[in-house]
Length: 268
Image (cartoon, rainbow, N blue to C red):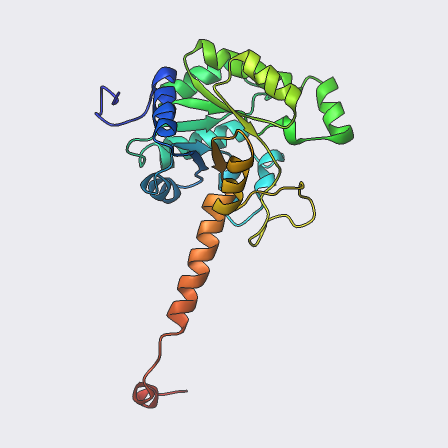
C-alpha cells in the first residue's frame, strides 16, 4: 500500500512488509536485503531489485573507507547516525522498497519505546538490531552481559517493535539467540557469520568456516540450508563500489593520447 501522503512506498506496516517478502518467495526468488550508507547506494540498490534496504551506522564508516566494525566502537552515537543517514540521504531517495533502521538497543541513554516511535514517525518500515552484541564474544561479552548491556536488551527492543507494528529483521549468532528473537516476535532471523572478507578493508584471518561475500557464496548457502535469502552490507555496497571504481578508473587510464597533441604542449 503506497504512502497516503506521497503515493510512494515508505512507511509500510509490518503486515505489508511481510506480504511483499512472501510474494518474492512465491515467485521463487530469494529475499535480498542490502545495507546503504549513502543515498546513491540506496538508489541503485533499489534499482537492482533488492527487497529491503537496511540503514546501519556502520554504513557511514564503510563508505568513508573504514572497516564496518567501526560501527561497534565508540566513534559516535550509533542510533543518531542511523537516523541521520535515513532521514537525509536514504528515505528521500528511495521510491518504493521498505527501509529498515538499525537500532542500538543497549544504549542506556534512550527510552527505547520513545526512540522506536521516532523511527516509525520518520518513515522507516521496520528495525534491525545493529550494532548488535550478539557478535561480541569472550570476556568482553561477559562484561557486557553483567553490566546492563546484555543482548537481552535487543530481544526487548524487538518485542517493543512488534507491539508498535514495526517489521523486524534481526541478527543472531547462536541457536539460543534465534529462539529468543523468535519468542520476542522477530519476523526475519539473520544468521550473522562475521565480518565480510575481501576488498580493501575486509578481514582475512578472523573468519568463520564458511564466509559469505559473493552471490555464488549466498547461492551455496541457500542450496544447502533452509535459508531463503541474503543480507549484505559490505558485500553489496562496499565491494560493489571498490570493484567498479577501480575498474572504471583503469579504463580511463588506458585512453590513448595523440602524439601530435603532446608535441603542442609547452613544458616548463
